[in-house]
Image (cartoon, rainbow, N blue to C red):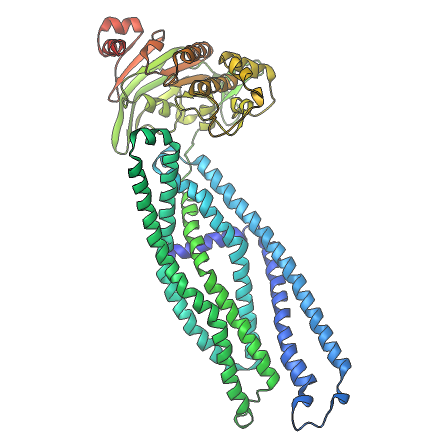
Length: 614
């Protein structure tokens, strides 16, 4: 990470702090200044007031005063004032800490909300290309690093900088000669520190990257545990993990080598500074009269105390350097995600449901354009992904309420057609129409709400079975609608077998459900949602024959109520389709009914015979 990137990251971090927290931040800083000033001024009390004023005449050998002459009243007043100042400083510091904690929580909530909102609005293309482990690392370890940065490092850093600045002013007021000696000493230390930080910056960036790679690899192995157990050599997996872990260890060793130099330097800086000032202060005191410096014992005592107050913040800043660099490296990944372009949506037309249950198309002015029918047209559609054409000049029409099957080998382009219909990707050429409206003119949220997906891999959320069925539907709860969805999906007997029925909590992607039962939950979810277009993508794959019949029956029931598009690996399940479209290498090579295509004795005929043989 270069200086410009570091500077930009810090600006973004402090921008989050400043925005919406201006008044609180200013109040907190003022309280910090008052608290630190009060605590530091107590050191002046000890040296200049108590030693040089109260005790001066009693510690000099030439003085004739005795303890009987001691002004206890004035001494008591000084002690009381010092104690009051100390108590006020503690109160100001406590309130300041509370305000900064409040700012921290608000800032982290804002960053997390922005990050989650951004993920929801990123193009599918980005999510497919970006490693899942990298995104999860941003949500977990990077966010945690930033939390630590805001919660601990920033308050400590603010406290250190203010203490450093106020101490410097007071040191100048006490004795400018000793102050310049102290500054010279600290500049040498800071020069060494800067060199070490510069060296370690790239190490921290690399450490975050390797950590994300390990997270991604681990998640990949665990999520595909059955597959890796069957197909992969366990030792190869272990070796790959060890390789990544070894890279992390080497990078980590470099990081902590730098840290190892930081710690002794930062821990001892105060002692070295204290000793330096004590030595030069003693010389100035002894030569004070002849040199005209006039350094008193009280001033020297106060100054040596200030030297600690001056050097300790530098120690704290040096100790925090590693955490600051980690936070900057982590924030770079977070801001990298936040800076990605949102999914483009130029649509201004949406589907509206009337009180009588019918649907109409409306524009952004809430004006009715036309009645919804549900006709779908692909006109000369072409699509390329990663500079490779996957669809070429595809044209077909789906009439309202039809059941259409897409047939072809794996990689032919069937799922691509479905993704283009939902505008998860943008077509390269041609146009896709619904009721003669280009889908680019339809709001994406409205378009996707029209679509219901029953996929091979069913997403079950950590929630009750009931909430999994109702997922994504807001508004008034309808018991009758829920029961109908359960019946449509042939799910009732499975619900009754569960001890808590619909209130059963599902965890670990619904591990207590079989693959077939998950598919029935998915169908119930679609039935409850009541979309206008239903897409079945390999919905009966890897399902036992009994459950497959139940799923097929449920699919047939749903297909009667909406336009449906089916992608099936078992061709026997789509023979009753109104239209079968055969796709090969991104092109439509034939289309028609089952009977028409069988009579053609072409590609579909070959696929049917091959499936019978298998």
